[in-house]
Image 1 (cartoon, rainbow, N blue to C red):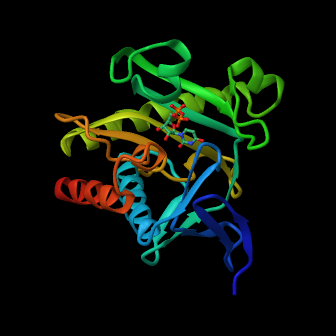
Image 2 (tube, rainbow, N blue to C red; image 1 turned 90 degrees about the horizontal axis):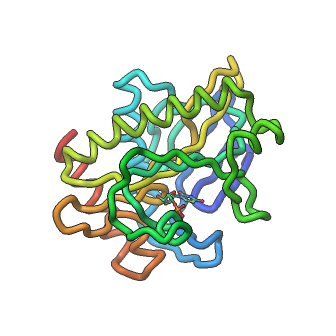
Image 3 (cartoon, protein in one colour; image 1 turned 60 degrees about the vertical axis):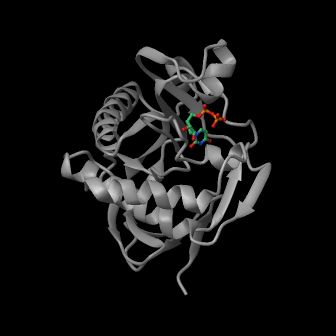
Length: 236
Ligand code: UDP
């Protein structure tokens, strides 16, 4: 059995024979509200692995650097080993979630421009929002690394907006994490991009195709993720 390196809310990370390669196993668990709401759904790990694999392959096709190597089973991927930059990067195209609440804006209204936000990755503190000055003062990243993270986040947004648009879906907002490759120190996109970490709405009906169906008890999670996967497969 390979060594378990880390167990998160939705994934487990295992060592492999190669110190620069990690095996990721997607779990069937869903959590919301910083782990306060929990459930397990048969098939969720398989669906998120499939959706995330497809998204990382599209990004790779556009020459965007990611940690992704390959999907090796229904629920597992191999990825490059990174040191995670402890910043959650949220990209927003349409008002929703915490932005609507914090600034009193109507959910669903469009933003005049894309917003990129940084949050300090800390479960104990509930991931507080920070700006570049906080990140620099706390030495979470250098000025150059922050610039590179912003650049890559904006590029990922452009590629994914187009991908989802082709599937008749609005990319409302999403969360990214970046890491520094253990091998070279290069900044690459890491973690996952899945309906757990994005808000995705049907373009015409605004039907939710993401984890909000679980957060807000709107619809069945596996059925929703299955619907999303087949819509993406139809345009691939
Ligand atoms: N998000 C995430 N993990 C987090 C926080 C947010 O994946 O720990 C995603 C979330 O799914 C949404 C986007 O980031 O797509 C923006 O989330 P928001 O700040 O609105 O917070 P939420 O409403 O999820 O509490």
